[in-house]
Image (cartoon, one colour):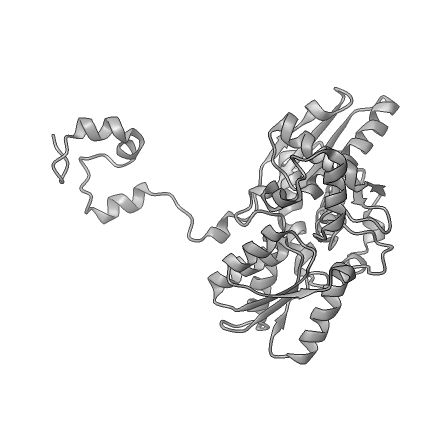
Length: 358
């Protein structure tokens, strides 16, 4: 038997066995109904946001009684946990009439939120302006350019707080733009309450500790509230850098700016403890994720792991058992230019401190 284009079926099956298992040659290639019933696909790449995998990494644990689990938010389609909030903020803005097709979006971001917003805005047909510190990694600027964002650089010395202030001033000058403002947007913690938290509980119902970095605080607020509602004994642990030091993706709540969503969601009632993680620790743990687990993660993921291991050490010392879940915020490809994975540790840590990411 031959195909409609004259190639023997046996040869085609030898070269493309899976294709012809899914689409038997007895079914005409012009039989639209048969092809539609055979194909399983998503209507949009946005459907792939969320439902990220949970991977056990207990080989890093100090005790066999303490299990560690990494939630790989890096598996979102645009590469980070911020895909969730970017999609939620845009969808909510459309639903409430704050945003319409063709209207410009404005947002301060050092990378992940900006990248996700720019990608989704390209799909929805909205121009976008991102304000970001000039000290961010080159890969982040390049990704924003790929998705067609207008980039306004702000002084690196002002950090992300400076980008926020300048975005607020620009929003006042252009009330016709849609300023999403991730730090005060209720859709930020809400999407984690509705999706990330339930996913963690579904995949690890015996969870005892949840660990994540303090950035906008949206992940901790949303996931933390959901988990506390399921089991009030679950401990919610925030990871932050020492005051005055930079760790990729994180902020210290004493640095002069407390995100409004932290206050709105009563963050002090949700958090059980904060753990301090220094830049060098973040780099070390990022490398452990790569070298011992095969997880190519960003620097703030190393900080989350460092915080989780501090919790694990405390639990192990007490002789108790635990199931600790921490967030892998994004992949490592946006940090290659920093040398975080390849140069000597002291140089990598020094480079990381020069680059602002949150």
